[in-house]
Length: 88
Image (tube, rainbow, N blue to C red; front, side):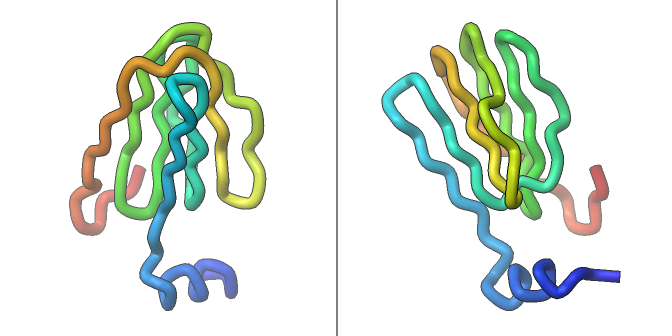
């Protein structure tokens, strides 16, 4: 059963927002799950995408209220759209 917050997100389009600050920080709002985090790769899931962040000395500095901040030396970021109905 969906929570009230999830219903509001769906009503607003279920969007996720990504903010990149130079090559040192990526803030992802609308994060549902952290799949992996190492010094070179962070993978997170939003409602519509799996997001991969590659770099060095990566660290998750916060995970709260459906947002996560990845800090370190960011070299690339990629989005992979989840297939319809795919559960990760």
